[in-house]
Image (tube, rainbow, N blue to C red; front, side, top):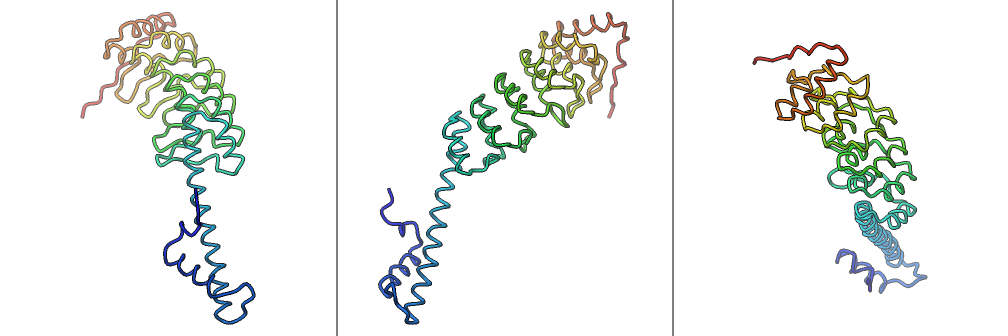
Length: 260
């Protein structure tokens, strides 16, 4: 507990304030007294600023912790007191991203009430929705989708992460929100390619059930989904794609090989 506010002040300022208190009375009008009163005013301002900074630092740390731990009560209290709902940590993650990546749905919902930047992406390019999907937090992802989170954008998208990790349970919610089944990742991979490459047969089946799914797209290495699956030993996924290609009456794509 604080015993004396001057404990927070630099020694030189604290000494000056103590001297000013001793040298001036409350009604002093002498030059030295007026100067002392000015010094007191400046000192009081600096002390308040310093104490305010200490309080803000504490609130910042408390907000980051509350978001990660799902302490919605503390988080809501801090938000009501004026802390920025788009506060970021040292790694560039907002409070919403911190809460979403830990599956803290209640904290996410508390933040969404304050018009946070729901589609903000951290320096790694990940949004709150992307990380909720990546880690399999369906309830959290649903809350973000209900809040209007974007599902289609440049770079990696939520559907890529769902396909890559085999998150079948969130697929329908993403499609209902308008996710593009053929959206391309930076390496030109589609969701079907990523699911096939990693052997997620259930996700492959769900994607193949959509007539719009492109079976013959090629990634930046010139590989189709079934060939990429075969390269990684996932024959079941490859056979599912080849069977659907045959059912649709499509020819196999010409594999593009780049020679350097």
